[in-house]
Length: 251
Image: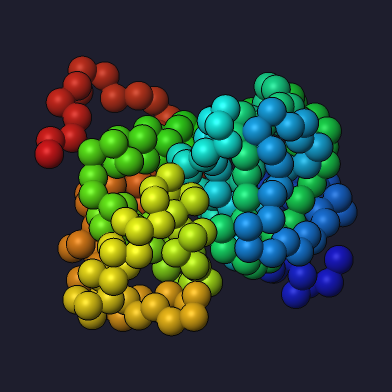
């Protein structure tokens, strides 16, 4: 594998945390995938055959209702992977997974990752740490969707995507944002117009550009900062749980 391609692949944080022996073994199985915005990686209840490692792409996990409505409960960028639960336990996807931001993405046959998970304590600790962090994002998102305004929620989403897009404009229509937020299009349009009128973002022809990062952080709820902090810390989990400290975070 060319050195330039190897460097690009290991820009994914999970892949970059693999011990060298496993990294060498998995490299030959990694396959680049090109997917467009909104493309379905896996349907809810679908059988997963690969683990997906975003390098610049962002994947959105949507909980789907019987009537076809859906809402995002988590997103996965280059800090993580989609399919780790399947590699550890069940190969059935609990959520619909779609592309929320186009970019590089590689995948690996699930059997390869599953085999290594069975024999590597390092990999088990890494996967469990990431899974716990992803679960905390799901919990925070559920609370955010229930308790915070559309303007706060859209600010949180745009900040998370702005981080992952490294400042590049985001290709979003109001219809797509409404879909992943589980909100009606009118409320999303009004929230986006409010943010634009405040000079925090610009929106034109499906392109969203963050103009005032600090201002957008003030417009967002606390959920953005909480999730960001958790993901920045997950790669180095504590060796033991704190004993006797039950005070937790104070809001």
